[in-house]
Length: 398
Image (cartoon, rainbow, N blue to C red):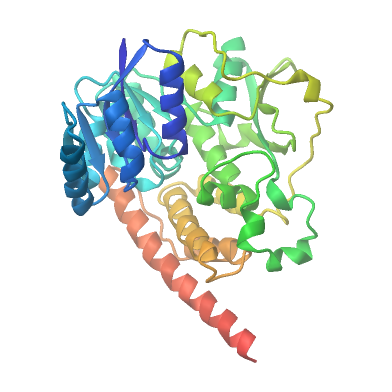
């Protein structure tokens, strides 16, 4: 039995990971869980999986969780930690064979990095790990002699397709994108789209930030950066194509012109199971592609005029250093401001571009450099949000 530590256990990926654990019992046990502050969900997970340690976001919630466990009379309560140190304790737990990195944001970065350095198998869903610190993390993985196993459907698909040929035989990777809810919206109308419209993804049910990132296609920009590091590719070897059905999750084109594509249902349990059981393929009765509904497969070129965030991501990847980290931090602040109705939808790329323009050339040599760059980018992004919000208010009052 392999033991899991899950960073972000109460989020969408964390919950689906535990669903896979249930379906494949008794292959996996759960020894450590970290969550934010969703105590109701975490409490249920503790009762079901009996982890040895758990971590929550805030100290007061650690106390509240301990009180609720006592009230319920849980026979073997776990050690309770909180904050960054708590997440680190979960990610580096001695008995964890596999660390599932599914926490949202840079909060999971340090814990994932330390897990990699320890030589643990890491199933990676947290985009920030490779976007903000790809060079550092992959250097640690190579030193430990461990492969990072992607959970994101696109990178998981590429990983599967690459089993069909040698690295030297690859011409390019092709990541597919749904195009989000505004694929056919006239560009002139994008300035007026609402939060509710941006959150209405046509194919996937995800958290708010990643859903908005899908609408701007910043998520695909992040995935290009991730793929560049994860699969040791040149930036020019990673392309994106719009595929509205989201049935083909990604493709690999080889030098002889052959293209391998991975198809599957729009269900994250499949890539999660693949990562947890790799290099085996284990039978599953949870996820099947409904061939009867598969009428057509469409593909379109990506317009950077419609999706300027994709251009910004490529520029950040090309420049390297602190720019990819800045890209992520600025986007997180901008998306949060949009969700709070402080800025318009098109304010997201405007703020990201402004923050990138104010970012100096900085070499990233250690994790402290990444965290410092992240903090500075967030500070600048908040300034840009205030500036844009003030401008919008002045326009509306005239």
